[in-house]
Length: 404
Ligand code: ADP
Image 1: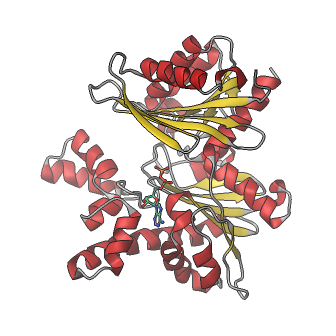
Image 2 (image 1 turned 30 degrees about the vertical axis):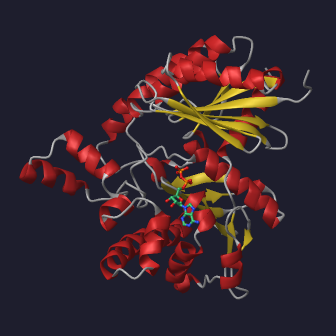
Image 3 (image 1 turned 120 degrees about the horizontal axis):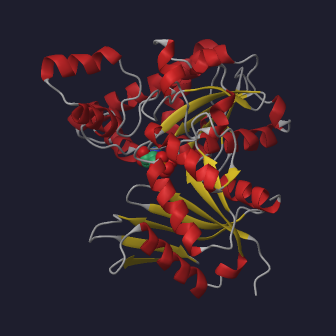
């Protein structure tokens, strides 16, 4: 029998389920996987274990429960189920109710259900995962970790929209922010790197992945972040526009007969890097086109990446307003961790703040390498820190289930 204490981390989308078993102390990942197209005849589950990757069709039960049942059989087969001490669930929206992670009970489930209106695509899927895991692992404590919780320290001046105040009071319409576990994780890692207390460390953390957001962190607490009521606000993303004039929506509805569904698709699925470039939502593809021989593709990709980088630089400069001091700017997420090109394009636009990069260190900090990349005469430090949201979920689940 195993003496290790591992946490099963689940991240349920409407038709997907990502999972990992993680040692909460070391962060070591024992097994990972992804079930996709759940609910359809093409449902598959991919499991990675010991360097092997295996894809299996979910034929008989293609729902979330079926994926969890398959996952359980894999855990048994690989001697991992005995070592599980808790299940940690990523939950997208915690509204104003959840300011930190919680052990799940009936009241918590009711509160997550009540918040579902704010995240109609995500929270119901998260609840499906919670209920399936409760049915499968009745003896294990289940813990919910919210994407929004870290940002609940934002002051009102940062989280209010300047619209009729009744919308906030009566309908909870305000800025919530997302990617909280990532901003939290990299801020703690940055403080370690800087050899100072997280509670005395002020940062601008820049998460650039498929979704992108930026966070101003004053003495360890989120004081502003770029995503809002939904994850559509703020930076340019893979397929999301980020900030647009709200008048654009009214214009499209009134002058071009767009429906709510068409606007939703436009701003969330057909915009961002994909919409601007007409080539791809993937930063690697666009960088290849920028450096490639095809002049038209070069121009399309360059435009998309220019808009992307300019928006990030503008946000970084504006977030200096939210902070009393700034110890470092931190890049993370698939793009932030890997693209020295994007980091250069962003930081080059911040020369008025006397921030500059050391190009050699910038080039070296890729593919999992962390570290400082600023030039010796840069006024502010610039760090690259790989994020690890699953580890945060595992740590919270371990801590809360032990103290229960
Ligand atoms: P998610 O938000 O889905 O977790 P990731 O954080 O994995 O996404 O980020 C995905 C993005 O990272 C994609 O745009 C991808 O092109 C980009 N990316 C990954 N590796 C590189 C790289 N070496 N250079 C540039 N961009 C990269």
